[in-house]
Amino acid sequence: MWNGTTPLLEATRLRSGYATGDVLQGISIGIAEGEIVGVLGRNGVGKSTLLRTLIGLLPARGGAITLRGQDITREAAHSRARRGIGYVPQGREIFPHMSVLDNIRMGTFVGTSRSDRAGGPDFDLIYRHFPFLRDRHAQRGGTLSGGQQEMLAIARALVNRPDILLLDEPSDGVQPNIVEAIGDAILALNAERNLTVLVVEQNIDLVQKIVGRAYVLDKGRVVRELTADEIKNTARLAEYLAI
Amino acid sequence: MDTLGLLASILYQFGTNAAFLLLAAIGLVVILGMMNIINLAHGELMMMGAYIATIVTHRGIPFPLAVLLAFLLVAMFGAALERVIIRRFYGHELGALVVTWGISLIMGQGTLLFFGPFMPSIGIPGGSFSLGAYSFATYWIVLIGVSAILIAALWWIYQNTRFGLMARATMQKAAMAEALGVNTDRVYMLTFALGSGLAGACGALLAPTVSISPLMGQQFVAPAFITVVVGGAANVLLGAIGSSLLLSAVKTPVGLLFGAFIGTVALLLTALIIIRLMPNGVSFYLQRFTERRVGA
Ligand SMILES: Nc1ncnc2c1ncn2[C@@H]1O[C@H](COP(=O)(O)OP(=O)(O)OP(=O)(O)O)[C@@H](O)[C@H]1O
Ligand SMILES: [Mg+2]
Image (cartoon, rainbow over all chains, first blue to last red; front, side, top):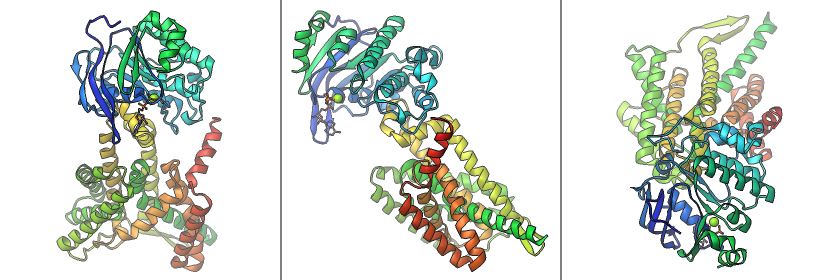
């Protein structure tokens, strides 16, 4: 459960949506440094809308978002990214006509407005976890398989050492062995670098493998918080994923 | 000697035609290709550049400096246009088309009011020389070189600079670029300014070769759009190079044999056929070819 120290990223009574109406009906969540937190819930409950609002691609219609205690609710998405939020959207959104290397380079602006940033982009780190990216650096992003594109999108978000990673359904349309590899990479980065992650996921195996605690969403609200023990209980978890 | 002269003359005509198409199109290539805005004020931006260069050259400023000045002033004008008007029409292609048409009318009529219907043009810099029975203008040979340098520089900027990386990403997926820390608003402003400035510089470069009048921009619009459309969207710079060479390869021999008018008709027909047969433009095939070569 949420332990009450100052969260790295926090949303309070967040509301947001589209022309068709509000999707998020007042969501409050917090993620502490070094945590891997899950966001669960069935299709269409607003999981992606939550991440889009956190990164700033959708404006908040109510409530507040803070990063390290600083209010970023009204900030443009590019400013939030430059504060150190890495974002991997659902569907990956690789730049299809750019090379793999240029796609990774597009991650080098993340976190650049931090005062305490240590060093520049870490390509070696990326290649260590996803070695195929080095061999394919000249290939066009659009020609990679779904799983390779997912790894490229994660590498792009990670290359400039973000403070927090927002991951939207990394297993979606990805073959099982690559899901496994992605899970390993996230766990390793969390252990090595204390990487903080907020991950939307519906794949039970991946949730159980990486997530420490989780919020369950339904109809734009947080309806439950799951502890590590509840997540380990496969039958219960399956129930919550289908809420 | 005369076969050599003839060969040189054909090559010269070919280069001249291709350079004209490229110079007419280059600003449009940037704005249409990178922002998907059909800029109907393109011709008037070229006209503005031509006026700036003509006016300052008459005041004794060296011509190369006048071209640079045209680039800077028209780029600043473009940046202001984007800030105040164009940005309200992103995502509304028809709206952008209408509003840029309105801008072109205001610029044309405004110039007429301010400067009258004609302005004495500047003479073509540099002289001419002949090979056998054929004569060549030094300035057009310079223009062929300059257009090659301009497109190469543009290519280099888009492939190798931070701005180029951000601009390409913004063109492909603006929201994702924004979410990775790119100020896409600024990229759009700079892109529109760059496209405008290039139109202004090219207008200045072509100014000595045409008569200077408020409606002079119109003569560049059709060749510019044809060059861009034939080039296609897969890779706009590669497309502009490919299509200007291809169209010139048709226009030059036909023009030499049957006269300039039939040459232009042949160019239009070729454009129609290419658009019909290759809806993705020349660049789609050029890009596939170059990709096969890097072994992707
Ligand atoms: N661009 C949009 N315009 C209008 N409505 C949208 C848009 N995107 C999503 N929605 C709607 O908002 C609601 C929440 O969508 P969202 O994508 O956040 O769901 P999700 O929980 O991520 O679902 P999934 O598991 O399918 O990815 C859905 O009812 C969806 O139809
Ligand atoms: Mg979703």
